Length: 371
DNA sequence: TAGTCGTGGAT
DNA sequence: TATCCAAGACT
Image (cartoon, rainbow, N blue to C red; front, side, top):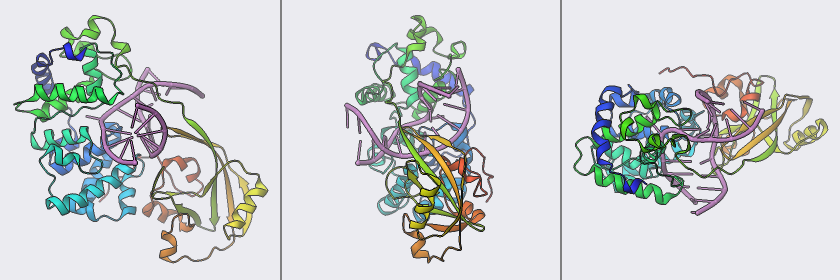
């Protein structure tokens, strides 16, 4: 049990190990409050390697709180395109506006005040406070859960919010008066990310806690941490349309709430459709289909939903011209030049399989970092 | 408390 | 192919 374990004995070996094994990461080079904030939001449920290029591009384009607060939503989502959990960046902008109004553009050096900002929970508040401001508060993430339940052989379900509070309380006490709370928190995470790894066997020979790890002593490393299994995903059958008028393709803005909120997508409907039904469907969109062609099937897996998609390419006669106001309305089709669509509109990688019929690529492909 | 919210790498 | 799950937060 973690409550029976003396956390104090972990500190010195951990800090000594971290001094020699800290990775070089972009956000560590100049850990200003803003850059620490951006990195911590990006790193939520996201691997370091995936975050790196996004962090560089994002902080170059939006170097401070003010720039973030004023960035147009489409551009903001474009900077986040492919990272997932898009509400993170929408919330971060709301918080940026808050910080401009209440704190003059400077993130508060106060755990409780940070916690009140949109998108900043106990982990992120602790990370910013400790790393950017040297305030002795914990930052408990998945790594910390894993290494501390292992070292103390605690089989409490880590999904229980009460266990997080308990860990935070224990850590906060040990951190009182600590000179380098930011290094301590980062060291805990670094150990979890690089040594006491989540999948596969941990590298115990390299671990500074090797001799005092109870899970290792008891041969229970593989069974810790304990967590309740995720519920099975629900399956959704969808039909995706690549509607083309010469060189232009139809996309539309998704609703402001819910899955992939505010992003752009290929028009799609729930369920399966015959070729004839597709013709009917497209006519209902005030368009004149000339030819319908079946495309391959595709699958996309979200955290809680699995899309099983069928696709159709639909060639239509000259579509009308839209005003800017009409283009902004959600659910309204906009015909865009394929290349321009890639410059301006954030399209989730769920549509990657059909994006190639638009002449663009989504997902996987690393974007070039330009200015 | 439990469901919602992405994407991709590792096994 | 299937499953897990990553520097979580919000409702």
